Length: 409
Image (cartoon, rainbow, N blue to C red; front, side):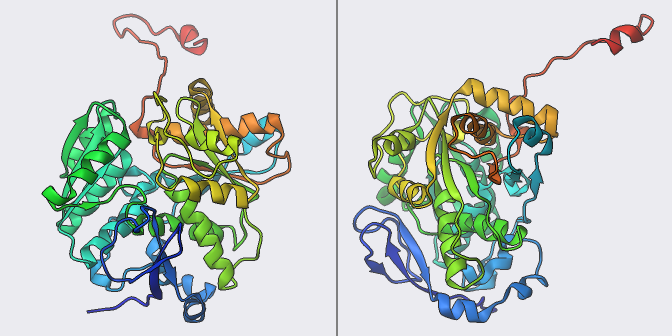
């Protein structure tokens, strides 16, 4: 059995700092807060160099020393390739701002960045002997869990709000998960999972209620730093629901600095939400460390419709420590940005990704993003899963083709 070089020392409560043993199954800490994986970073730094990465496959498992999986046989692969960073030059010229880069996570398995977190969560579940997993989802996370669990022979139960996009529901069920729709929000579905743990003997894989989805999402930070030649952008705009990726990237940058691969510069982290569900924005504006549950949550960007985030304080800490901010955009602005990016750049964003472009446009006007800053936007899923309002004309082949009409459409 091949062992991966791994440098995990322990797990740590993100709120109290209490340490927990590695290589044991954990959910939340005793304080009810997320656990973070800690590493012997000095030993990690001595074990690998930047040059070592050049000989590895262009996948996020190339960063295996930074990850907790010990046995290679527990890695569950579905083709986790590095995702491209695409320049948006036309949009940059139109807005008269600094470089705009879009990291297109829609290229990952199951079409979203949820593959990163769930690939690691499922690999560690397999390593620790889990045979049944459950989660609440607004769509993409459930699809990723279903796919990776099917690959790993782990039984899966997924609970969705009943207005989750139909394509996501079908994808989850088709990939093998037992799929349930509930007349509530994602936090209501989370309650079903939490209350069913003892009776159903499933492992709760909810956002930040297990330690390893953060480690998977951390690879976004490792990857973009490598792609930018071990530099970081001035600003990162991140669509924020549960916020695992924002927290994970912040952790990645700290670990990279600790081993000397990057300097002390950090991106300003901007948490982007929708005006119909903006608990993190409200908490940021009010100067609090915790967010109150959002009432009557609604937005077309279902992935960021999260009324309660268990890691709210971690999101807000990263935003504030980085001199970033939290911002909400309207559904109308999301729709406009969605259409503009497709027509001007040829890049098909998901609604949540479009929210980051809408936020950029809004905050360039407000001045919170400066005209000379390099900005990186996260497109967290393929736009192919979402509605694309369009207009088109019909041609009647029983009549002569009217090319003047065609030219003037």
